[in-house]
Image (cartoon, rainbow, N blue to C red):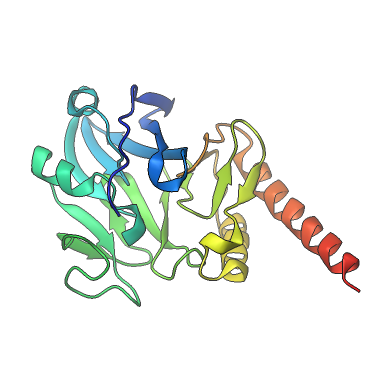
Length: 223
C-alpha cells in the first residue's frame, strides 16, 4: 500500500478532460502503474494517483477530490490529500471497515455501487480482483476506468490480470462480461498499461473471446 519509489515525468492527455501519468513500479517488479485525472470545468479529480510533481497537476485545474477504486490503490492519495487539502473517497463493501479498514488512513467519504462521484464519475461495483473493487464510468466522455480487471503490455492486446493476483478469477470474468453488456465505452483506462483510445468496446469483446479460447484449449489438453 506504499507509494511507488519512482515519480512520473509527464502528465499526458488521453481524451478531452482525461489525463494519465505512469511509472515503473518497484512494488510490482517494475511493471507499469498508472494514475489518472478527470477535469470538469476547471476542477480536477485524481483517480488512484501515483507520484507526480504537484505543479503538473495544478496546471490542469484546481484539485477538488481524490477517488480510490480499491484499498489496494491508495498509492499517493494521503500525501496528495494533505498537499491539496481535498477529501479522499474510498469504496464501501465487505472486508472494508467503516473506519480505516484496509486503508492506511480513513477516507473522508465512502461510496457504493451506482453512486455519483466528483468529476462526473459513476461508481460501478467490479468484484473479482477483490470484493470491494470498483470500475468508474464517465458517461459524458464515454470513458471506462477498469482498475485491475484488465492490463496491457505496451500497445498489445488487452488481457486479464494473472489469476494469482485475483481473489476470484471467474468472478472477474463475469464482471467484465457484465460491463461489456452494460456500457459502450469509447475509451478504456487501465491501471497497468496503455489506454485504449478507440474501438474500446470491440477491444473488450476481443479480450473476452481470447480468454474463452485459451480456456477451451486448456480443457482440451487435459487427459
